[in-house]
Image 1 (cartoon, helix red, strand yellow):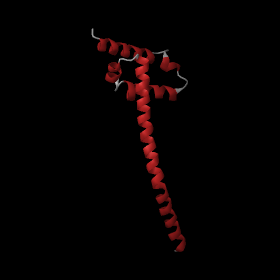
Image 2 (tube, rainbow, N blue to C red):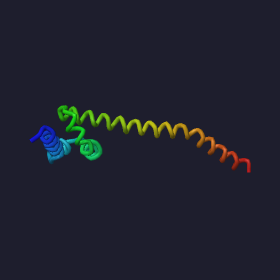
Image 3 (cartoon, rainbow, N blue to C red):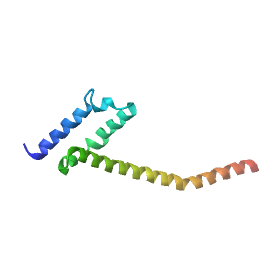
Image 4 (tube, rainbow, N blue to C red):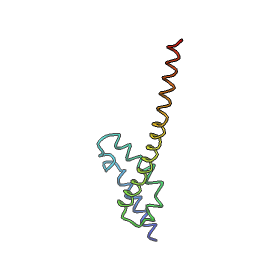
Amino acid sequence: MNSRASTRELLNEYLALLCREDRFRDTLIDSQHQFAFDCLLEDTWWPNEDVIVSLGLPLMDALNLITSIHNRRRLATLRQKLDDLTRRLPSALQTQYQQRLCKVKR
């Protein structure tokens, strides 16, 4: 068995262990934390399985690195949306003010 195959198997076993009943996932504080864990599995870890395996890092280090990158990407996306909304807000407020002013003048 080659190194990548054994690392992939180890990753799959490790993630399965975290998901098993009475293990990590089920001991999380509440359903929101469990949902966040499920999102990590589905949105971050499984789609990046090949990257995690090819990194050659210990699994927890690789999972943390991939998670950090994923979180930074999402943060950048949210920051961009916030910037766009912040830029549009003054003109939207101005339009609203002008509409109200027109109603008052009638």
